Image 1 (cartoon, helix red, strand yellow):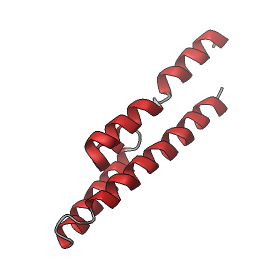
Image 2: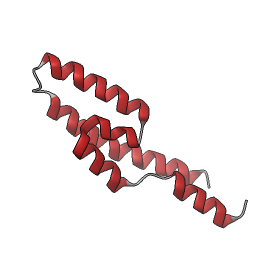
Image 3: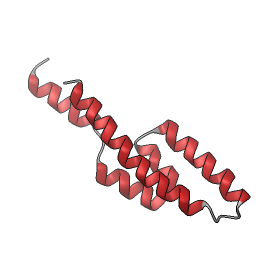
Length: 85
């Protein structure tokens, strides 16, 4: 595979940090699905369960955790894509 094709493939596989942050700010744990389907599902379920138990008081905590996790997940994914070149 030519160098240009590998770079193009890596760019297609990488995730946008700005979009990941925007989606998690707007949609909380559901926005995390853009970066990581597994962690998006896990945090959404956890937020729903804990939110129900605390009458929604803990929802903000999961919102912030989701934003931070999106940043970490995008960084890890993009590093893996670059390492595969």
